[in-house]
Length: 297
Length: 290
Image 1 (cartoon, chains in turn yellow, red):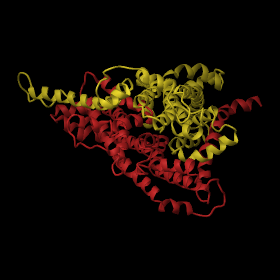
Image 2: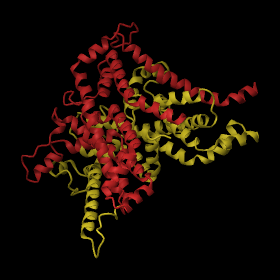
Image 3: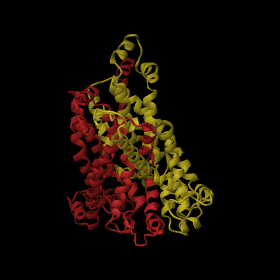
Image 4: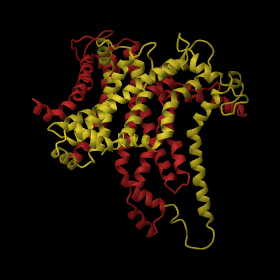
């Protein structure tokens, strides 16, 4: 589109156009610097010694690379009174995210299949009610949820956090699968029914094999949501069951001792690595989930 | 029996989720609404006494700060993220050879936890060793950039970090929108000799109205829910200069032990969300049925 209209019909090299093109790339490059700068600063800070951080400046490269901060962040940094680094909390996050993602994706797939292909009276209303659930600010459910988790004996436990993530993830996972299955012709289901296949059989042999892309989108979406969650984590966990985001915040804001910025940065990168990795490996699906969550239909 | 089971399988499959949503979304909202009308403090009470909590809320200077911060933050965040996202999308739409790589760079912050974003920017913006110290080190001794610890400016650091995190996402939305505009129309306009910037302002951007709307909805939703970023970046401070309704609610619920205030502030948050989201969802669902 750019190669048009700036050219007065004519001869030779068009300097105006070349200059414009250069400007375009310079602007894009500057924007890229803006987005990359914090990551760069985090990485370089995490491999500097405290001494160098105090004397050097923010964006200078380390004169001497050390991984001490990483070691401390992983297994020695203090979150309040405990000093075990982020390692135990990292595994808490894994233990929360894996079942949370699996369950909410599975239930969402079944729900989406029903809403899209087995419409019954009221199914649309149920779907709309679930959809509204995606948009509530979670503050409105925090207090009663804290009490209910207590009553169920799951307050401050990892199963409790999994439960919360599954419940409040259902709206989106159902939406993803519903929108995907709606584009599959209902004739397919009808024909299979005529051939004597039942509800689960049709799902298992017809819909599931077609679902790989939407499963990937949903898994990535849910994983990012659950891994990056802080609100539920900080509200419904206790010492020992906290997810990594909560531990990171505690490390950064712990007031005891010397402020170790390099350890803070290393811990932040560790907390960010899993979702960053997913993004780098499956960026296309990540973006698709983001846009599917906002532009429906 | 077997036949009944077979006929009702779809309903039985959907039922648990439906019940869960009824209880954990709608029932819980009702509970919070109820408690917001009581004198609950440390423990919930269930005798309705009227709007006393809302009166307390709106006469509290802390809530006043939090609520007006929401509008300052929300407005700047949404407007700037949209403009920046649109600019990035248009720039990237010019047959850029490295588009894929640039897109990845612009969008990666969206994969990070707000806590990570907050931690990074807190370090960059800290006056003692961050940007300020760096520029001073270059010889500009009088350079001051103390927004993070300045009660009047701290809210803008939240705006900055939130834009850094989310503008790439707006770019992705707009880029998809730009690419979905009918090529024929654009070609026809170009054949007629209409300059590129006019093609954008007169044809492409107006045809993306629905995308502006969804971007607006998503961003305002993000703004109202902003909690982690404030906690990680400023902790609501200095003082409570950067409190938002979400942090106010959390403080009342979990550190002040004032359930009545927590419930009423949560209800106000929900009202704000609903005035934005309900008309949108309503029109979306209608247009789909119709």
